[in-house]
Image 1 (spheres, helix red, strand yellow):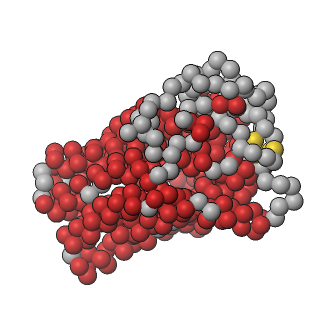
Image 2: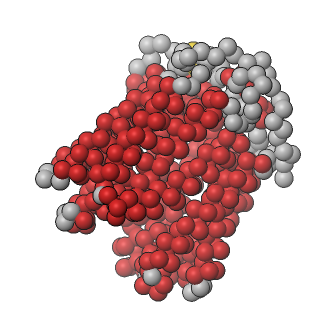
Image 3: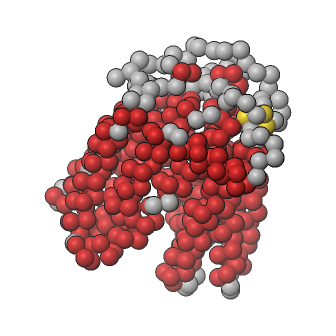
Length: 436
């Protein structure tokens, strides 16, 4: 397995400044940017970053439920809700690569602050739109494009900032993964309650305040000089450099290629297909509880990954996601709800462990001056295939039947874990020297 990483190792800290300065050169280590004597995870910088990230994740988790509920309750129909989600997610998937380039050029923190301010403005206008009544859907769609674009500009820097605010990068990722699971679990539920109490407009006000809090916390970070690309590098040249860095690491692009197949054939279709099985047989409440069990398992996996320090992180993460086939197989075999919930907890724990091991590997193995761009390619490749798998769920069930689609998904998930373990650069990737 692996030896635990102690929290006592330190290196001489850099002098903190009130605003980070781009600096060409080798990647700055997390330890070198930490203040002497501060905790390995819960440093002053990490507390501000954790607050900012959690506030943004909560707002993002509430947005789809709030918009869909607001449109449907306003009599706009399911088609309008579907288009709204497309206008929200489409810009994110299409522009995240450029977000990586801009984050490297202007520094991640500046891009994240700008994204938070754009989201604040967009959500205040969304609040006005829902409170006043939506007469023209194009106004809503335009604001959702702004929100999706802002998140595309924020996401690449979210990864590269972690090594700058915590010496214990894996532990910090475990904490952030736990927060992501909790906000993903609680955000939609909170949005549902608030829609019933006060309407979608007030949820948008709360979200705007959350993005304002995130921006304030990011401004408060004290970061030293951070790596940056050479001056005069053009946009397309920066993208090309990021692609070369991405392609040069077999373990990195190998995982993404495997994950793209998994997203189309297993991960993407599963939610809709599972709903078509669970809701008619056990009701919508049971389906909600099963998704809550998945979230609880992800929290458990994130907490476990804070202390679990394997010598080969990606191999350990691949073993953890061997639990994934349990849920689709349970649906095919007609397991009772309590057993399906148990399977979901195990699936979530595996996903949580894998997520932390993957994020930590990327953040510690890729040089800081190209990390934002490499992370953007990673997100575009892995997340970008999910909508395709989701869209294929209905036609696949119509052509092959529900059980066949679920069995194929379970088999592909199992083969995904085996493929990750079979590719030598993935299986043998060790912990970064700074974490050893």
